[in-house]
Length: 252
Length: 252
Image (cartoon, rainbow over all chains, first blue to last red; front, top):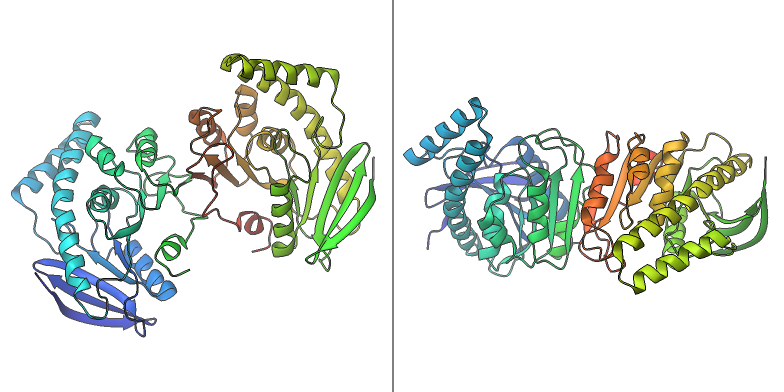
């Protein structure tokens, strides 16, 4: 098994930020300076084109570590952040750009779905490898509850597949903002843990029905849809239940 | 103008519950025993078949008065609680019962919409009369911010029309669970104040699209849809933003 290699450490506001590698996957772990052992682990997925320390994600990570004492983890998705892109990924991105320029929505959707499926297949294995390595750290251990915080878009396309495959995930935050295809719906139907789902009501890229169908597919007895007015990047999230992961990971 | 006639008073848990009449409309006012003057007023609508002191409504009223110091008000809708039914209302209820027994959904929907529209027309005038009378009390006064808390179903069918007609309402909680027709959508399009909207995701009586269309119709810049798994009466509301009215009525 690959182990966690810590390569850098800074701290601010009572939270330590530690960069690490597991095999060749770069990640970051945020935890309270004086946190308890075996605190819950929260995996944060980033959106397409972003990376493990994108400002919005990092702000959420610092807040969650400081407020709830979580071990918060992010990794760069394949071809994102510090990671090289494969030739196939480059070709897919070129096709997406061309489709957008041509205003060819069906081609844009098809190419996005293909690229996301390919990235997600790799990302699920990388998340599992990373979680294995983190749980081998005495500070975390195998019994710390694990949650997934996905944001909208690619973080959810990956996270839904991860939560379907990974029984260690006990609660998950997902969202809309991407093209939901049948494999994603199939994965969602296997998810029974509590889900909080964020939907930008006026997304300009993706049909609203797509996000509603994804929320509908979760088999979870407890699921909450939270929609706010606004488009893909402009939705102002107000009134979101900030205690969701804490409640389900034993911290509230 | 009709004034508030208080007819009974009890108190428990730091909250006074005062029954009143405005003209022939019976109502109840909950307020903290030691509350401030000119505190916000929250109008709570009850659901069809219920009344001003239905257990769920009363629990919300006591919580809101104790937590935020609100003046919380409920009145019996026409033909509900302590109020007599008109011959027309009785006929409409008989028709609804017959349609349900016959499994005739279109007839059920049409009769429900007609009865609700008729009740709502009267209820809007009664809410306005009640609010006028309450604002004439020195303890409340004309400048206290006013919100509407509707629950789902008939409380929203009335509340949407009230909020469209009544500029004093500064924020509103609405919900699904009833047949949304064009007059309700037209009223919703006139509403620009912040809206929190509750949707039982698996309502057995009403198409989901009906509630989604109503949420979509609000012209509010800030609107939040909150859906939980569960049917008309079985939805367990979790993670709802309890501070919504307090934020918009100057109490949070």
